[in-house]
Length: 305
Image (cartoon, rainbow, N blue to C red; front, side, top):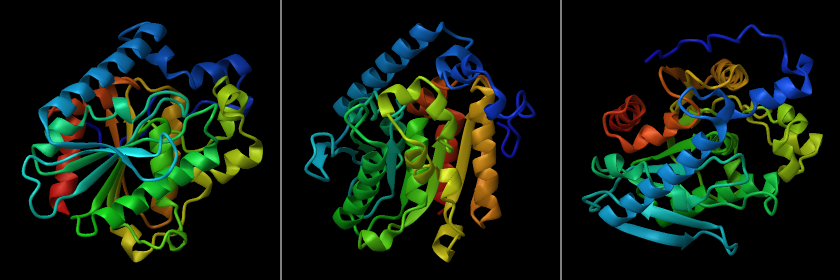
């Protein structure tokens, strides 16, 4: 499965600043890199598959849906409880992707069944998406959702973050949080960052920013790559897994490698997992499968803590 392997093809390509506008669009269009399906179909399949998986998860287990963590319409959580919810349990907090402008918590429970069957509670986080949502607001919402969970479940056996694509960016921003502003200190024991974007500046030159409307200052303020804090003792104990798909674009792979290196240089415990045979979409969709390599890695991470 390639733990600690580098990003592979494209890693030595020229800087993104040197790319043409079209090349940059291609690099930040994950659907164009899937060998399975054409760009439109792979996105449609992703939306349909995650929605159907979430409906199955809701129907098969004990849940608490649409739990408000704030006053906003999207400031809600879906909680999927372990098969045996007695006692304390670890919480895996899932933050959805969709380039900060599509998807919701209602397509974010697909990964719950193999985790809840092993005693892990799964929480799907809702947050405002563009064009209504602003990047500063999205980051704050996800941080507030964590603070809410800490207060609601003060005796969990640790919190584990899992974010995909834009959700990996938001999860990485959680790692840079000054929790004194929130009056809590979440016991974040692990973070699984899947096919994420950690430097937002290239996004400014792509179609993705049409809906986001980020300025350079907003992109700088919300780039995890620029917000890596030296690992405090608690942070040093947090296991960070940076995941890339074989068929992620070279830019996505570069971003993952460089963010992992920055965390490691700051004293964080980091591994890179390069998963063969998957693209930007099924790398996360397969979390609905108990035998999938990433599902097993997450379960092992939680069981070791």
